[in-house]
Image (cartoon, rainbow, N blue to C red; front, side, top):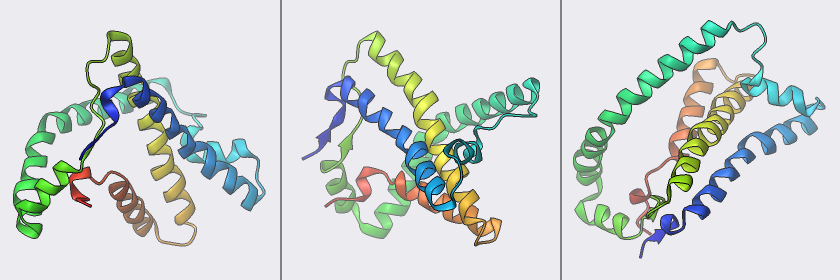
Length: 172
């Protein structure tokens, strides 16, 4: 039995706003523990654009879009390789079938134009921004105080991957 969160696009919109907690909760906790102002913790997540030139910011945004578009177009191919050659060989075809049967679907079913535009905007400006701020800004910055930068990046990448495990990998 699959869980279909996409039946009502409004639910997806509301759930997506929960991503803001990736900025608020860690910043509040760190501010309390480190006895710093909340705004300082938020700036440490990467929201401090002081001394950044406008052209430099635009170039970074364009480079990110080009890389994102590239991966968007090859993602189905990479996912097929991952599922068919890695997961199927490690766990068998039954594992994939069980995972698909128990998947959590977040694809919106028949959203209207306003809902679709809202979902796209939220995914770009809230979900992506909040996840990057948490996994790159918070995890890397806080862990590099105790670990080497390389290990901090590996830890952040691992946690990001665990957070984004495809639903078919948990056939329970």
